[in-house]
Image 1 (cartoon, rainbow, N blue to C red):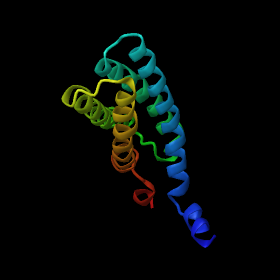
Image 2 (image 1 turned 180 degrees about the horizontal axis):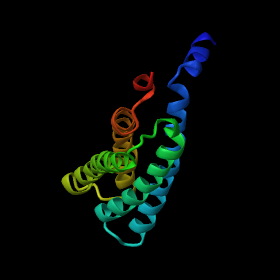
Image 3 (image 1 turned 45 degrees about the vertical axis):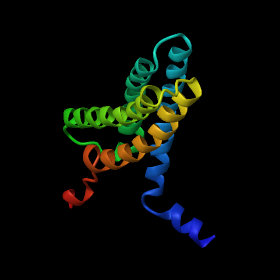
Image 4 (image 1 turned 90 degrees about the vertical axis):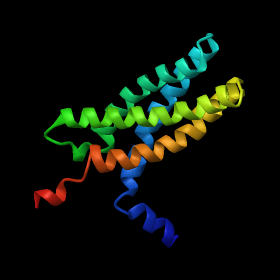
Length: 146
C-alpha cells in the first residue's frame, strides 16, 4: 500500500495519467482509421501515414489543452513546430516497425501489421513522445518564473 500511495502522490503521476488519456484517444483514432483504410484495400504503409497524421492532430489538442495545459508558452508557434516535428519522428518509428515486418520480413497479414505498427511501434513512439514533449515542447517553466 505504501508503494501505491507513493507512486500516486508523485508529482509526475497526474501528468503521466493525463498523457495516457489524451494519447489513448489519439491512439484509438489511429487504430480506427488505420484499420478502416487497411480493410478497404489501401496499402499498409499509406494507411499508417494517414492514420498517424489524424492521430497527431488529436494528440496535439490533448497535449496542449489537457496534459500540459499549465506548461504552455507565450510562443505557440514554437510549440506547434516542435510538437509536429517530434510527432512526425515518432510516427516514423511506428511506420518503420510496420515496414520492417511487412516489406522486410514479408509478414503481410493485417494482424502482423497491427502488432508491428500499433503495438510495438506505438510503445516505442509513446516513450519517445512523452520524453520529448515534456522536455522540449512543454517544458516546466515554473523555475524560470521564480
